Figure 1 (cartoon, rainbow, N blue to C red):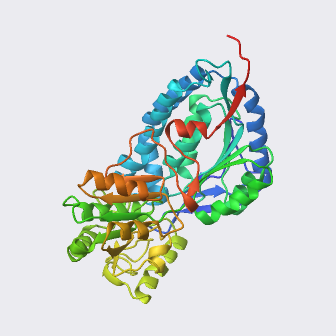
Figure 2 (cartoon, rainbow, N blue to C red; figure 1 turned 120 degrees about the vertical axis):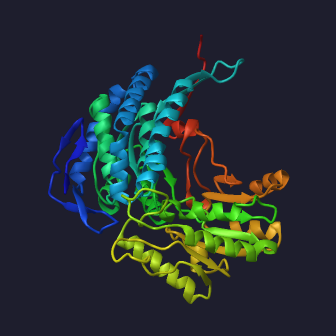
Amino acid sequence: MLDKRKFYINGKWVAPSKPNDLDVIDPCTEDSIATISLGSKEDTNAAVSAAKAAFESWKESSKEERVALLEKLLNIYKKRYSEMVDAISLEMGAPADWSKDVQTASGQSHIEDFILRLKEFEFDKKFSPESNNRICYEPIGVCGLITPWNWPINQIGLKVVPAFATGCTMILKPSELAPLSAMLFAEMIDEAGFPPGVFNLVNGDGAGVGTDISSHPDINLVSFTGSTRAGRLISKNAAETIKRVCLELGGKGGNIVFADSYPNAVRDGIRNVMSNSGQSCDAPTRMLVEKSIYERAIKEAADEANLIKVDHASKKGDHIGPVISKTQYDKIVNLIQSGIDEGATLAAGGPELPNGMNKGYFIKPTIFTNVTNDMRIAKEEIFGPVLSIIPFETEEEAIKIVNDTEYGLGNYLQTEDKEKAKRVSRKLNAGIIYVNGIGPDAGTPFGGFKQSGNGREGGVWGLEEYLEVKTVTDWKE
C-alpha cells in the first residue's frame, strides 16, 4: 500500500502537523491502495503563509518566465504521462484506455492551451486609440483551489495552470477520494522548478481543509468544482471576507433528439451518458425524444445500454468501470429504486450488481422510459450510468422541459436542420450547448447558468478569473 501522508508546502514534502490518516479505496476491489493524511487548520495556515510570502516576488515574474516554466512542466507531464494514467485508473477505477485517451489527455491539453493563451494575452493595454486610459490586469493573489474526483487532472489543469500563468500563488486541495493524480502533479511541479510557495498541496475533506480554505482571510479567490450543495456552503464561508468565488457545480443536462436527427443520435447519446461511468457534471442524463420516433428510440437506447460492458479498470477494451465510492454507489442505487417506485419503466439495467460481480462499486448501464420531469430521476443529479427518456411533441415543449431544472451546465440537441439548431440553442439555459455530438474547441469557456455555478474555465476566460482589472487615467506614452 502506498504511503502518501505528506503535504507539499513551500517547495518541500512535509509531514502533517498532527496524524489523521485516511485510506484511499480502489473502487474496483474495495481494497485500500494508499494512506493519505487529512490536513488540519495548522496545515492550511502553513500553506497559505507560504503562498502569501511567495506572491510578493511571483507576481513580478514576467510572462516569458511563466511561459518557460509551463513549457517545462508540459515536457515533464509528457515524460510521466503513463504514471498519470496509472494513478487515475487506480484511484477512480477508470478503465486503462479511458484513463489514457481521455482523462490524462485532458490534463496535457489544458497545459498546452493555456501556454498558447498566455503567450497571446495582453496584461497591459491602451483602452482605446483615442483614450489616455490604461487597462492593467494584475494577479488576484493567493488562490484556494478545490478539485473533484470525477475528472481529477482535468480540473487541476483548469485551475492550477491559469493560476500559474497569471502570477498567482495557490493551495490545492484535491478530493480525498482521488488524491493520487494530484500528488503526482505536485511532483511534476517540483521537478519543473517553480519557486517555493507558489504551489502548495494539502489533502483534506470538505468539512476540514475545504472550510479552512474558503473562509481564510488571506486567500483572495476560491475556485471549486463539485456539488451544488458544497458550492452553497463555500459561498457562505467566503462571504465574510468578500473573496472571489468561482464555482463549477452540478448539472442535469437535457438532450433533445428531434425526428430529423442523424441516424446514430440515440446510440451516441447513450454512450455519452455512460462514459466515465456516468460521473460527468455535464452528462446528458435526460433524453427528450420527439414522439414520432419515441418507440424506435427506446429500442435503440435499451439495445445500446445492454451492449456496454462493465469491468475492472485493469481490463483493456471499451467498457466502463465502477463509480467512485460506497457512498456514491448507495446513492445511485437508491435513485434507481426511486425511479421504479415512482412508476417509470425500467428498459435496461437496474439496481443489482452486473452479472459475475460480487464486489466493487459497479452499476449496470440503466435506462428508464415513461419518465416525467417531476420524478426524482429526472430532477436530481444521479452522477451514475443512469438515463431518463422523456417524450415531447413540439419544439417549444422540449425547450420548456429541458429548462425546467435548477441546473444549467450543459445541454444537447440533435437535428440536421441548421436553422432549428441555432434557434433552439439560443433558448436553452446552459453554459454550453452541444449540437449533434460535436465537442467544443480547445480554449472555449466552460461553466454554468443558475445553480450549476458561476465564472468560466478555459482559454482567455480561464485566465481572467485569476486577474484583477485596474484602470489608470492620464497614462502618457
